Amino acid sequence: MGGCRLKKDRFRLKLVVPVLFSILVIVTFLNYTRKSPIELEVSHSTSTESIESDSGKPSLDIIKKVKEKISSQDEESEEEPYIIECKNDAPKWHDLDFTEEESERLQSELNKQIELLRESEDLDDQLVYALSAKGLKTENIVKILKNILENEPNHELANWNLLNICVGHADSKNSICEKELAEDLIEANRHNAMVWLNVLTKKNANENIDETIHALSQIISAPVFEEYYSEHIDLYDRVMTRNNSMTSLQRSIAAIGFAAANPLPSFARLTRFCSTYSKERNDILTLCLQVGKRMSNSSRTTLTKAIGDSLQKTSYQILGDEESAVEVEKTHINNQIWGNEQLHKAINLQKYDSQLSEQWYRNLISYGEMKAFDILIEDAIRLSADENYNPCPES
Image (cartoon, rainbow, N blue to C red; front, side):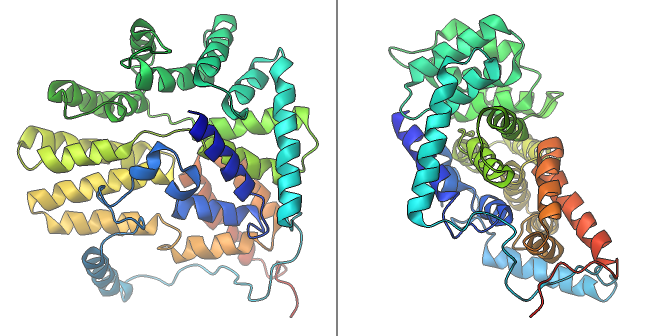
């Protein structure tokens, strides 16, 4: 766990180096290579062992087929709505032009601010401290989370984070979580499909196939699909607004780093199980296809949606349904920044318009990644249609 904390600190430092000249670069970075900044257990979940290639992009043969399908439809499709494209360097509306020394100073100040939260009686302050403090041992994190829940039993984020820790530790020797506590947390949150993804991916799915099948069924049928990604951003933003003097842009970047640094399910276990057993058992093939659809349709984050797309694609390929596999890949490519030209243009426009960038961040908190990107495209099109709107700097 100490290693994870160190990696979190390194991640947050990366967020403020000069290369990251605006919050949109952060967004692009997280969306395009989410596994790189997180550097936690999910680092192996999108490796060559998973369904997609290590780059996160689909295989070349699928891309070729998708491009052929898109090309055949281009003549029938209407021209994309206009979005302004600025060609010159972005203006310095942001305040993140830091040298490495300045970045280290900011990180040091941030660590001090986090440490000040230790003595706070506010439960949200305590939670941010537990999830951010440098070198804090797992057992101490559990102690803080339990204390929060004793004072506020319905505190969703404390509940969620304690569940994540306990599911991964309850079966180990000298566990910091009692097995009964883990079982109680699972039962209390069984309505959330992500709970069952955590249960499935934090244990060896191959050890008990019946338990894995039960977890897959619960992912499909659970009425809620909540990852708490945006909620973690909002938590950090609110706490640090009250407690330190960072600028809004600095705070938003740190908040995204805080949310991204929290461990995600080890998706590699899910994809390995499905790719192995779907070839042998039709019932598992059907479940894995439905789980993929649930993840793609219900997730508000690009990473989980991408894993869902991959599960569907592999399932269709096993079924020999190449047309459906190509359709899924087309949707997947369109959801990625590198594959959606309109999204790429809208993100680039934010580098020249601070209000557009701030609005995207607020939508990220309110609606999640996917919806925030959809709204961003709509806003960029609306603004570009105004003949008086031109944020591009003069050459």
